[in-house]
Image (cartoon, rainbow, N blue to C red; front, side):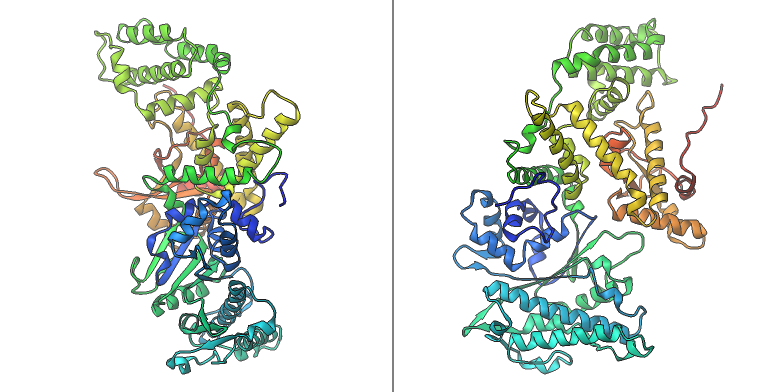
Length: 635
């Protein structure tokens, strides 16, 4: 078995990973979150940003991987995975895989077809997809049965229902080998005519009037050695976003209308701002299900379920190396040591005293300040939090025009006003003004991944290098301190932002917009009275502003550019789009939160909730020229 130098650098869906290795590092926790109906008939769409786990999920249901799960069913590493596949009816403990998973990708080939929305061109797209579904089905069937070679395919006979004559393109041949030969020849003919530079080539392309391979896969029966095999099927089509928009809409529309009796999974990157997929009259839940992998983890209980999933992913990776012993989390110190707190204590107290200096003679705050001074003699994380909570409360109260000056506030009122959001604001202010580490520990590492496994692995890879470096330098242990963890993940976050211009179509504008949102959120977050505790990490466009954004008339060309930039940022997991409900004082709208790793780059809190209303014209200006803080008005 091979062991990687840095096991977190290899992505689970990479085809260079063997099926056995893939099975060992696959985390089964995602299976627990799959909606119950996705193994039933119909069309099921899975969306996520790149690295969200779509391809990994699909590959887990291919025959060769399922056979690897079954072959290693007694392994300690698969004690969690195997029972979940059995409970879903995908694997039988005695006889092995019970599902024929057919996986194809839209990553190449389809864009070579002539663009446009004509019957001939749509027919060519259908014909090419039919060929690939048939070829991949036969290859998957070979893997499912454990046979090799073209001659062996002839041992698989095909039986058709009485309505097989309804197939206008797919021939009703008797063996899998013969059908594979037909599909290969038809695919070659399509590409041969695409390579013909004659203007009439596209008119002579093979065409189909419907996606016949779907009806074929649902109705055909496979018989091997006289026995019916692979009666349960699952078609998985990956990288749907790589199709042209017309092709994508055609595929989803026609598949939905056909109402297949077996499950079809479509995986694609998140598309926003007008990229609708539902066919006319189709209803979510009955004809089609649409699942966002990020939203699976983002509901009320989602993070508590994502945390063990992420830890499972990291620990399975950790087992694939021989350098560091123990679980991944054991190499990340979760708490500040007393000496680390003592190192910043004097600075934190000085900041506190400087802020409340003007209020020391005010009887109203005398008991609050006296309690803070007594507590400041301690050396603890709780003392630092209470100090800055008190500071925020004093500033808030002093800015209240209705306050009374003739009565001292009781220290008990501090405890009554002390909330989790206020403590979050105090902690991020301690980081900003006293250098108290904030971005450390497994839980915050998982939050910074924004429910994206590739981002989690990227940060884990950098942390792993730091762990190994400590070991090489013969430091007392291979455990990273909170300060070391923060330095590493903030560098990864900075590199993430710096790579945007190279990695994205509208990268330069996207980086300018993201940097501007980060700067704007910082200004709102680090106000002394923390009015938006724990802080602001996103901006909101009201429905009125969103209507302007989606209209080509109101904002002109700049509006189109902004729409592309926002769409790309959401699709690439740089911004997280959330719906905002209406209230008595505002209309509903859409919130664009910063990716949680970018919050580390800008020194912002990791909690979601704080946002500020902006206008499209604000975002256009930030995108083109960057954000600059308004000059303070002199009084």
